Length: 316
Image: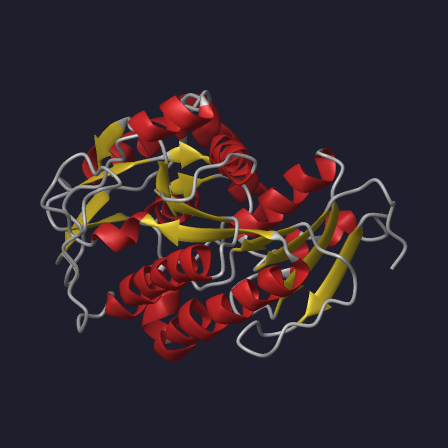
């Protein structure tokens, strides 16, 4: 390991994933030496190929549910490892639960051993199908622990609980970000989420599949905005969960119509049955992020979605 003595050292679990790879880029831009740990269960080496040969980048192929060994000093541990889309955690229910429990325990153990700051990538899914709208950090959620989404929701809720336990019991510097719907380059075409699904369908002239009547809402945050909020949170002194996302809410039907306007296509909209426990509303209250991080999204939806469409067009 040829690391610059002045460079802070960051370990990113799940660093070959959509968000993890963008975080890695941001950390390298900030002067960090970055060690990515990933087993490619849902991540991709293509997301990191532009970093081959980078003098401040190192990759370790490993499952974080096994003991994590890093010989060097570590300043920051960013725990992003987890299947994160419905298609993944429905196909991988037990690995999802294991990475949220054992993986988080191991990542916290590494941070404790190295006296490093720790950030957990949690999710708006901890709110389940919310009965409070928009969602604030003090809302405890409406989650079905034995439903099909329970493996992801409860894995992240456990991860938050053990992170806070390490903070209070071991006096560790921990942070928890609750990530809302995010989009941008490096999403997988077929990961089951609405942004890649609609763009892929429109580019291939397939029907846009809307589940339910399309009145359910999502709030879409461009990836660079999200990563900026997460970086600011790690560098802050705040230890309780913080929502990071875009509060501009739209219905799934409105999103589909926007895609049809932006992509020349013969696609039409096709309605299908709503999946079990699919959230009806999802919108972050970002009052806390504005207050403690001076953060709010700056990339307009039209700008971000055009960049995302360009990326997917290059991949089809």
